[in-house]
Image 1 (cartoon, helix red, strand yellow):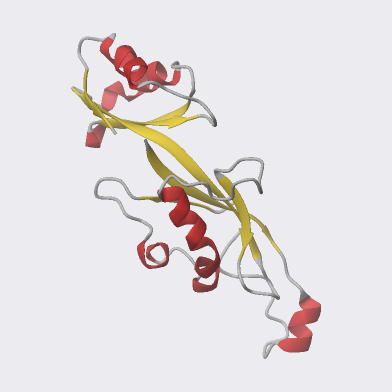
Image 2: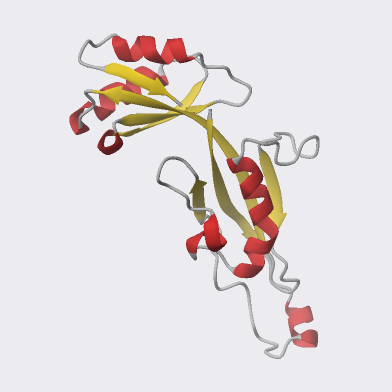
Length: 180
């Protein structure tokens, strides 16, 4: 099983009374770095490593200081906030800025990498549909340029490797060479 982490900006606050009272620029306003709805995906598989150095420049340093520990935990497959949230794969956190905090939803995404020999660009829809039909599969992202499909697993579901191999093997054009 592999893991990615999706970070979504779910809210921004601005405390103008604190800004007027305490800041050098009393009209600073809300955070200019993030917008509600922004999404960032972090991963560490194969050649990809989008975690290092503040998300490779995609994150504000103040926010990164607060959320990076949860992202790292998710990328390692750990429980982000066991017994605190209704899903241990998820956490709600905010940045350190007391006058204009940004609120983030941080989610661990569990997936399997199904390596497929014979996979071509025009096969993506067929492979995606076949793999999404397996019980417990939440979604599938086919990456023909890498000869694999990322199969995302639903919360508390178990998806046996044999089930994934079987649906791919239904078309003799394809062969599963491994599952990570």
